[in-house]
Every structure is written in C-alpha cells, then in structure tokens.
Length: 198
Ligand SMILES: [Mg+2]
Image (cartoon, rainbow, N blue to C red):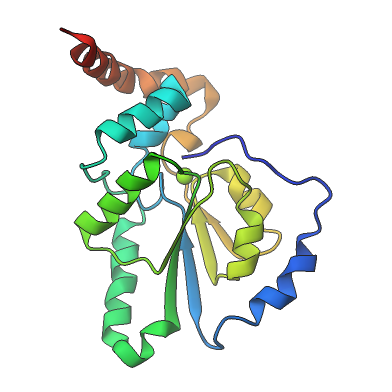
C-alpha cells in the first residue's frame, strides 16, 4: 500500500551511502520488491483508498489468516527462488531478496501469512509505515527496486535502479478511480453489513 510519506527535508542521502554499501558481499545481486501492487495484488490498496487507514487495518486484521491474491511480480519472485535453489546452499547468498513495504502494525501479519502460504522465501522484510523508502534502499544498494507507486519510484531512482510496475489502483487516472473502486465498495459494504448484523 502507499501512505503519505514522511520525507526528511534537506536530507543528503549520499552521506549515508558509502559506509553501508561495504557491508554487502561483492558479486551479490539484491532485488527489492514492494508488497501491495507488486508481490501482492492491489486488493488492500483499493480498500485503503476507498475507506481509509482504519478500515484497511480492520480488514487486514480480519483476513490475517487468508493469503493475499498474487500480484504482477509474484511469478518473477518464484523464478528468482528457483535460481537460488539451483545455485545450491553454498551459493544461495549470491541472490538476496527484500520486501520493503509501507505496511506496518496489524497489516504485517497478513503479509507474513501470504509469503508463508505461497512458500516464497524473502531474505529480509522491512515494514516502514509511512517512512520514505529511499534511505533504506540506498543502504540495501539493490540491483533493482520494484514498486507500483510513481512517488516511491521517482524518489528512489535518483539513487538506485528502480522499475515502476504500472499496475493496479495506484496507476489509474484520477478521473477513472471512482469506477475502478465501485466493485470494491460493493464488496466492502456487504462485508461490513455482515459484520455489524446481530
Ligand atoms: Mg505498492
């Protein structure tokens, strides 16, 4: 999901770069995925857009035992996993994967559950809430970062290779958002009625 981002003004990201980069092994390929709208579908993002943070968190809490639907890079992430398996235990370090998402709090549990249900291994998961992803990405120094939010991509691409995943509600023109969210509204209204019924 995409939240209003807290960006530190006048922060020079380059100051934090060089010390952190040396931590990584030479010849390691690091790949960073966003969660909602990239590994996962935009289902949760639609609910957040339609009903706000509180309903989103309630929804994720209620569905925490149900895996999220697959997103556009689900298949690619599994291909990477196959590559790591083919490299064998001794060389699996050569590919390191990351989930860097705006989720936090109660919404984390569903993300973990989803990865577990899918059987997808991610080396590091970072739940950032509303924090700017860029300083974390600089520290990770990825070969590529995937995100469906053009805001996240535009900030990050000045420092790391970044690919905009043009998918889901994040990438719908403002004039078409109401129509895109109409089915979500129907489902939510039905679910909320069921929840509040005696
Ligand atoms: Mg996203």
